Length: 575
Image 1 (cartoon, rainbow, N blue to C red):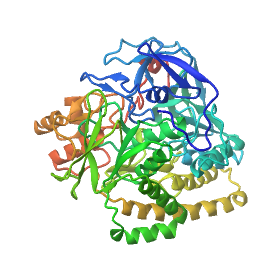
Image 2 (spheres, rainbow, N blue to C red; image 1 turned 90 degrees about the vertical axis):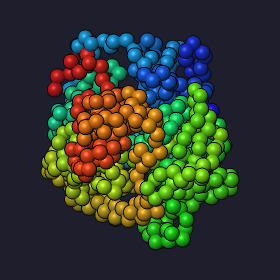
Image 3 (spheres, rainbow, N blue to C red; image 1 turned 30 degrees about the vertical axis):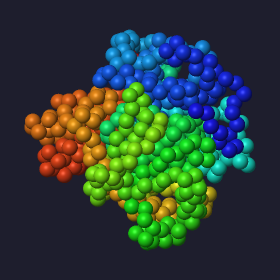
């Protein structure tokens, strides 16, 4: 449903399209996802198991919201904008063969001095510092709007009242304006699908193929939300918390009328409060961590000393939920989602210290939208593909790139900033982006130390302060990372290929001892998301079966195409 956000005005124009022949009215600047969710059209793709799938990640990574637009299959509803007269249909489970003829699209080659991949906090900060010193820098971002997943910005069709929007909107607008004023060149709507070397990258847009050959490469690709397979998690109406926030902040659309949120981390509480303030009924928030105050005095004191303004913001979110009567259930999670063709209810249960549901603690809540957010995983496909060293972090269960204090990796021409190198939030990403930008300038011999020193001093101070804050925040929300604790044998682990937990267990019991072997036997990880939403679970199962601790090369190997691309476009893009 449509909702209001302070300071963001509705557009003057509406857009009319159809979905499965039914009329849909959208707003100018909508994505197809926001227009369809606003009108209750949730089932967008047919799955190979016969079910329907809808918007899930909201950021173009999972491909669950693929639709057919004017006879063009595979269009992602969360990435594609609405246009008057569009005919949108459900994506069939087995669409027709794609056009494989090469050479039908224009090809462009760019050789910038610096290429930044990602237009979020870290990428914009690094690009601004570099461009302000006269070095040509290009930012490539697959979304149509800058700001990334943190500074989610409304489309230009919506008038903005700067005096009424919140601080997150304002900070994003300020960072974007700085990059634009510095002369940064932007390629929006461009998806990088091939990373063969730091100076040999392939990308695509709707109307063009790209070959990118930078002298220096800054990766600011961010993160995606950690997947946790739960019975019913593939039902339309179930999405990540980040997807719900994108709908709300970018398009002023609520994921549903009665919403429940579940997971681990502060984003869930923030989005729950934002939904309440927008007039949405939030029926519950289930948080995996133990939030009892007397167990968190040390972390609370550390957060207060590091970033008082962020603690105040967090208290405001909790106060909003208390005043609205929203139950916040800690040491708990949604353990089952029920419904026929879409989510209709969610079951919440307490969890033990290992993340397993405690029998007898179940409570059912009626809800037409379920938002799941269990933390984040670095989007490190590009840094891994080009050969940067990584290490396995057992505390988070993810790979972290090996880098210096300024973001430089084991490959001299490559820097990684922001959550792509380790989850630390937007403020750390912005500060590290500035330091990485200065390091790139020094490497090019283009730095002006006098101009940089004051800004870098502030960046270092900000970095130290917010890293301390993040350390205490992680302590506050510390919980056992979930993989398959909530799943049953029939629960789908691989959403793309509809591979169930029982099938994976059978393959591993039959002799497969690695994630790669399980992938070859079951097709888990071979779908369009490239394993992003099943690899943690498959790796955990393989580790249990083999008894071998995970390392840098234990999971699925990143390889081109990093994002799905038509074979004709691959054939026509020589790198």
